[in-house]
Length: 528
Ligand code: HEM
Image 1 (cartoon, rainbow, N blue to C red):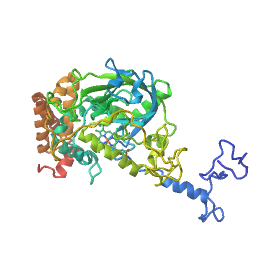
Image 2: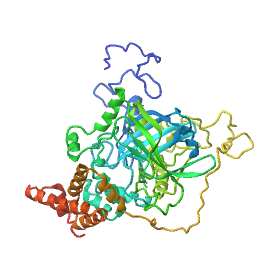
Image 3: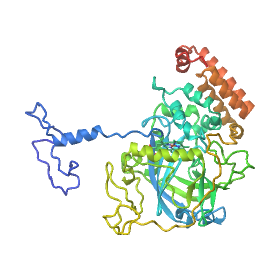
Image 4: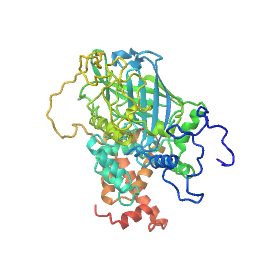
């Protein structure tokens, strides 16, 4: 606190702890605005005050439209150098995987999906698991979730899905009726809700959960041959822990930042979380022998046919220095691949790839890739410049500074030599708007239901029934029909569960006030 009767010890610029403004001017009074007399009025030339307050007015950038709440950490990825007993170069020429023990720095952001930046971390929601690898060949982002599958397979449906899951545009309250309205018209979601409403829908924290790339990618070797790849992160040291709904309620009643704090504190005490990166590999092609399409993100690749093969280990060992600068401004995207990694034709993946850098130009700004958290730790030399907040020009010292175009004979930047044969898939098909041939929306949902342990199935049935009780009969019936197609016992138990939940609400005398029932009745949503 500045007391005008005592003079600050030093206004020496070089003194490490002297407050300055952003122009580098030492600030000798940070307590009092400049006024005409000590009772005001305030004058307008208060440069320090105006700079401080106008910057404060702009402290928030738009939240991520999904995955707004998150926590992040720095770490390292160490390659094993082989895969399934073969040199990894058999399948990919990506440099970060080639040598045993090779280390690549990483930054990871975990998140919840639907609600805003300060929402509770106990909610039933997929968890984001986004990893930025700062490789010698530039950045690779593996933007995944904790669950291994997704709600939809066509990117055209994503904005509608997110609207249905987010709060009602009128009441600003999330509603299971709107959620299940969309689900009940999207049978491909049946597998995902089977995971989401089981204990797997609320991981205990970010350390004790798995991660998955969900979409199907490709690896490409020196000869240009591609294989289909799924990525999975396994928490080898911490193990997996999920929460029952009642445990989540209990935590939420006293703490809604528990996952962020858990990660931060574990790293501070040196208990570094570790994940093993595993891949599943499949020959490139359509695979008529399988009862699912390998490019369908609503499906698991059975682990007995396509084993999980470890390729490296990631350790998170450093907390960010500043949440905003690093975690909030971090920008991940599925288009950010390095040589030796490629896209598959998975439609959802291709839709995502457009969306990420588009939203980041809006959310962070057109030069978001120059921020330290997003910039590669390798050389950048482009002919791109201009735009808001340009920090520096990506020019090479060897480049003729007059030449900001390519090709040129005057000493501009030049194309890199190819690092191997280009992967060139062949296409011969009509341009259409069609569903895939093998949607098979229910079979794997049934397999997953049957693979759960008894307590997981019990929890799934109860959670689904409690969520569906507030929906119209039409929505309930459609969802029960899908669950029954998956497994007749599954449909029957959820149907009975809804009746029991209704009875319980009536018997408790809460029917009048139960928010879900009241809302459905008062808003007159009975016409389905
Ligand atoms: C974040 C779009 C599907 C995982 C985001 C963001 C958008 C988006 C716009 C905000 C990005 C930002 O502001 O930086 C889409 C679209 C999808 C889709 C259009 C489907 C068509 C998926 C799937 C996964 C996923 C299938 C999981 C594999 C994530 C994660 C984040 C995210 C982890 C947060 C990244 C971070 O921590 O900054 N998505 N998404 N998304 N998405 Fe997706």
